[in-house]
Amino acid sequence: MSKNILVAVAWPYANAEIHVGNITGAYLPADIFARYHRLYGNHVLMVSGSDAHGTPITVRADAEGKSASEIYKNFHNGFLNLFMQLGITYDLFTTTRSENHFEISQTIFKRLLDNGYLYRETEKQWYSPNENRFLPDRYVEGTCYLCGYENARGDQCDGCGSILDGKKLVHPRSRTGNLSLELRDTEHFFLDLAKLAPQISEYLAKDKTHWRSNVIKPSRYTVNEIGLHGRAITRDLDWGIPVPLHEWDGKCLYVWFEAVIGYL
Ligand SMILES: [Zn+2]
Image (cartoon, rainbow, N blue to C red):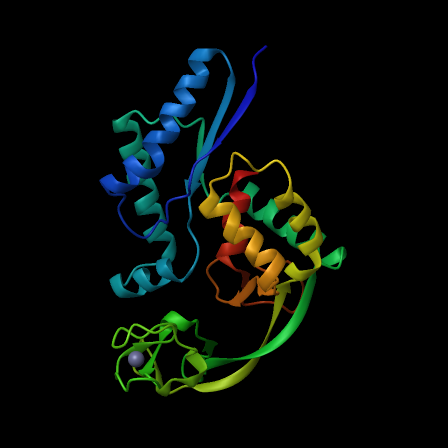
């Protein structure tokens, strides 16, 4: 009897060209797997698409003086061309800008909220009074509080290689325009991962012999020993899927939360 086989291929980020390592690492193996199952007589659905949101795309758009929309469309069309030329046989290759993706992501957000899996928390974030907006970490530069390097980014220092807490940067400034910044309160929704820990722990405990040990071991260790913590699923950004609530204008769903929903 034929089986249904879903091939869920990684979503390329639409801010850079695909290189040959991406082809051999992700797209070609998936295509071989899909072709094998089609020949075998199984029903195959091979899906993926361009990941079109997030700061890597807006940063690139600002650098090139283009809109984020132009940037993602340009790379998305390039991906389609490349896959067709190589003969990669997707059944569906879409983008996270589709109407369907917006609707499903916002529906899942609302359902998590209604069922008590989201909570709100206020945190400090750099705000640019001149630009009238909060700035994500990648938009903030300043002096590293660990090594004194003057061009550290909000999330990372290229001088000493450390991951930084953007709020502690010395002499913070906006990447675009060298403007001075101030810390302001901003409220966000967090996914209450700790609440899901019992179910995840149970899921990881059984029938995982087909998982690689370097995946299953750290997964179990994180859930059972370190413990899960809430993680923000919204951010102050105007390029993305809007938070589907009144009075949350200017905030979008975090790309780590919504991109994976693209498979649905
Ligand atoms: Zn440093």
